[in-house]
Image 1 (tube, rainbow, N blue to C red):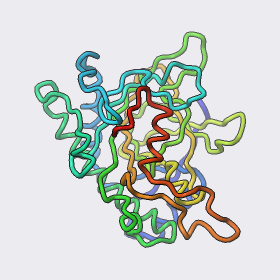
Image 2 (image 1 turned 30 degrees about the vertical axis):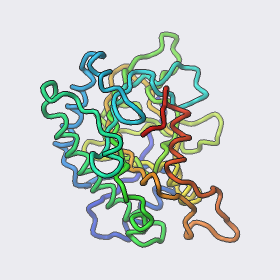
Image 3 (image 1 turned 180 degrees about the vertical axis):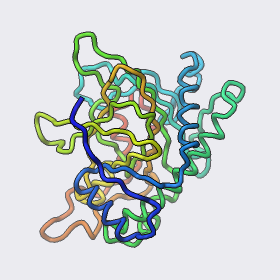
Length: 315
């Protein structure tokens, strides 16, 4: 394991929006990661999601494969994804289950795959409640991010980032298996997240590591501990593009520690038709835009085709 990294803690309940936004700005400049506390999602609900997640992953493989993903939504077995394309492994040693909103255009075009009610009666209502609660957190957080970038608080809504509910929840089970040769084994190989912002809840088992300088060799990995009742928040690649590299999309991974690890990642991503282009507050004549404008749909298609086995691009 690496050395421990002490991340900033952001209090979402603070009435001082401007001072909170300045703290978020500094966290995004320095780390690209921070803890989010007093966010309004109860510890009971967060624990309930982890309990129901464990029940789903405990089902026989044949029952889970009935819900196998088509595009992004549904069940993904061990080794279905390899986030680090240069890795020599057969894939990441994790199982995943991904779902999103049942509403809006995306929800109708790509319906969720739910486990049978007779198998897991509390599963769907628990997950739908969690989705709604975390979306409220995400929108409030994005208002502060906009202020941190010297924009109007509702900027991301104005540019259509939330026209349709594109955010997805990904339940993750890391097997915890270790390599008999003594080599480091990854449940999630080194990567940066593709979208805007990720909110992560964990069961407290260690394994998450970040590399603050992704261009440096050899890479220096630091451990990020889970704090009960908080989210670990990190900046994604699209937000790095939007901010012209000002806010950092930090490289991270999950290493195996010899025991199972469960986590719940919420990827707050923009509407597929939203165009991501350099913010005026993040460029100048002496610091021109580093990235061309890109439509979110096209960007995700390219990125996921590189990491997901049998990716169809239909979701």
